Image (cartoon, rainbow, N blue to C red; front, side, top):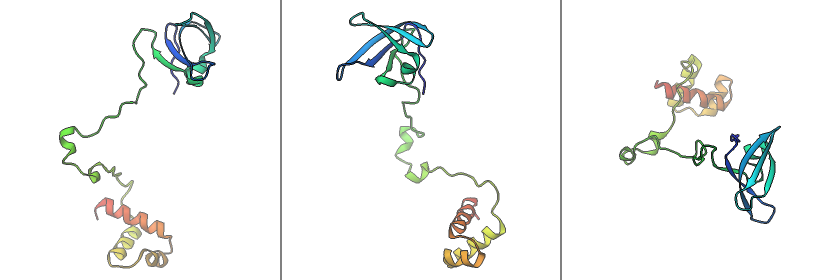
Length: 147
């Protein structure tokens, strides 16, 4: 994810010393180079805009140009169920079920009926001339359709 680099934004970047972190403010941007000044020492640094935007050298945006703290989008996870419902629900309630794209074919229905009658998947696959994975997919399709 690319983070926008703007004049006035504050960044933290890895320094040359081991474990050192420099906090700097972008003063100008020209020709793909961000001209920054260290907040602590006042020293000037020139960094590529893509280095900041891609988070290279440990770069992370601290304050946006308008002074608001930066939060990465999508970092907060919310549950689908409200806290009051969560105790009543089980793991199978959260399972994602995808509707089949089309109705099961007659061969899929025939395979499912043979499986229900106790014939093994390998035997059904051999009788119908298909692979066992195909029989498994057909049975899942019939099961999801509710037939």
